[in-house]
Length: 369
Image 1 (cartoon, helix red, strand yellow):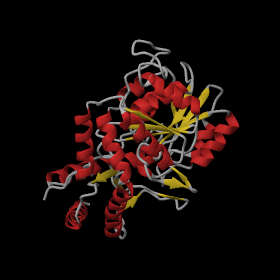
Image 2 (cartoon, one colour):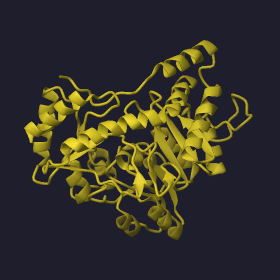
Image 3 (spheres, one colour):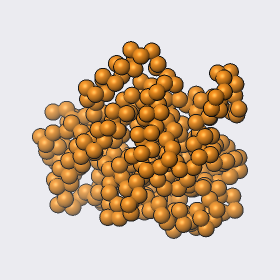
């Protein structure tokens, strides 16, 4: 049996929407962008959505829009996809990494506050794997120290905490729409915010620095081509319309895994905080500390040989070669992150997984432990 690691959920509605855009002749800067932005803002419960070509681009625009400059420090997690901190380097600022909670795998609140200095300008908590971080506590830290917050919720569309949707915390949030995310536009991202000025600046900078009403060759500020096409936006509109269905399918798959693994003492799963609802991005298990990283890697290799798509998830940011070279980070700096990252395995997770496929994945995994 071959079981793929991930896959998008595309219906005839998305195919029809793309065909309609292709036939319209408005492939970019057309009406589907605004429709998608409005749909996402309404879903999250904020005033503005700004569509961009990736979550990474959205992070970069937000860092610029909030005034982070060379010499500033921005606190974030070493347990994330590397874009969460690369966006800081784009503006010649310094990513200051702090360790994670050993159970939720999200940024540690106490360690974050302890890392604040006179140079700190921003916090970027990440909602890891769809589990919303303790954002109200980060908001309190930000208020106390006059800091800005980007909620990196690229993996958490549909999640919530204490009655607030992912994306509604801090100064702004950013979602990503790569094909393994809850919804997809192929490639793409969406900035969400209640801040009029952040929305205005991000809208301008994503479109080569043009302001509203300016001509094609007029540029108010430094900008980029970070636009999302109408083709991608059309997919996004239909995906948002189907989001309850999509999230229910993902929850079904996660529940099947949890039921089959609940009595397996050699496996741990990310702790869910009952203060919120979780939207599943991936299904990642952690082997107990009895296992070494080499043993984990051997299990991954054998799972792949038996047709099970899987991966380590994540590799710590601070041990990436250029982070060690640029900032002096080294192995041992963040022991909780390193202990978790050395033992995680992302199992196949997408809406089309069958019970038979999940049974095969779980049986194969247990046979290799």
